[in-house]
Amino acid sequence: MFINWALQEINLKIVYYGPGMSGKTTNLEYIHSKLDPSLKGELVSLKTKEDRTIFFDFMQIEVGRIKGKKPKFNLYTVPGQVYYASSRKVILNGVDGIVFVADSQPHRMEANIETLLDLEENLKQEGHSLENFPWVIQYNKRDLPGVEPVEVLQKRLNFFDVPSFEAVAVRGEGVFDTLKAVINLVVRHVQDQL
Amino acid sequence: MVQTRKLKDGSRQVILNSKQYDAITKVLSELATKTKASAILFADMSGQLISQRGNTDEMNTTVLSALAASDFAATSEMAKLVGEEAKFKLLFHEGEKRNVYLSNVGDDFFLVVVFDVSVTLGLIRIYTKKAIEDLLAALKEGKEEGGDREKMIDSDFSSLLGDALDDAFK
Image (cartoon, rainbow over all chains, first blue to last red; front, side):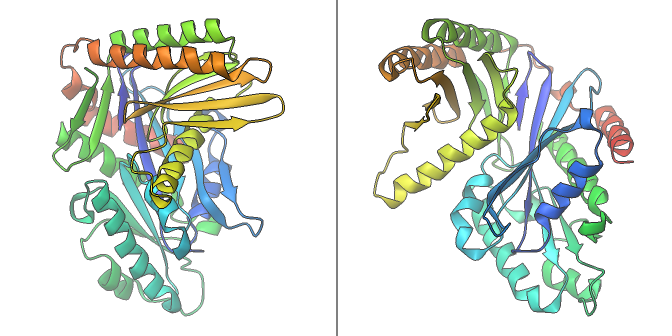
């Protein structure tokens, strides 16, 4: 978190984390497509020519002044593929909140778990732990046939009982609920920490 | 001293007061005048832009800061891989029309200088070095302001923010 008293700005960094192809970029693309232009900056995506995130996506959103203060939310995604581990680590620098985008398909369960462990490992290096850090889970791709029941996903992934949301990010379902929840958690967390 | 507070959960919170902000902006203005740089940005290592000077109207400096921070982060990983124990101190990108010179300011901040190829790198290096010293001094010296921090984010703020988000996400 970065607070600039002179400009009354509060900058918060939120990172979308999750296995490859789980829909992290899709979340940001949907948010970008729906927000009023006055509230959002450019969506920058560092992609390979195959359209996979190689480094990160970035977008800043604002909601105007609140009690004279100007909160700004910097949203980032990380590349999901296993071999971009070091990119994921560096993007977590200074992170204030996390959205874990899980893929609801049964064959992606192992990837979800592996990425969650990778997240915990990287958070540790930032001095955090999933146990007491503001984060939420989004169970994405709920529209696909044969997805795992939410109860199974909850049991396997949500071991700290954080807020969770079902989503179909390509259609925008659950996208704003997820973002709002993580922002609320981050702000509450900041309040508690002061 | 710029307030870099370790919070209970171990996370880092950076708070900059008005005096420090003014001092930083002054250093950037001087650097811009002396080097004739097209743009100068001062940002936090997590990618958050703090202050900017020069001709930045046509430039998306928010994104530039985010990219520059990642540039630093990526090259510091690179440094480890090639057996360099410290982080690389400066990064230089050479273009046909413009060059970009990035240098860290302490551990938590960095400076981006965008300049025309007609300006010599030596000049940029000399003045940037001086500016970094001044910036470090400004960050160190700024006096603490009365602790209104608790009031910055109160429960009222949270609920108003909730409303604003509902509005924005309609």
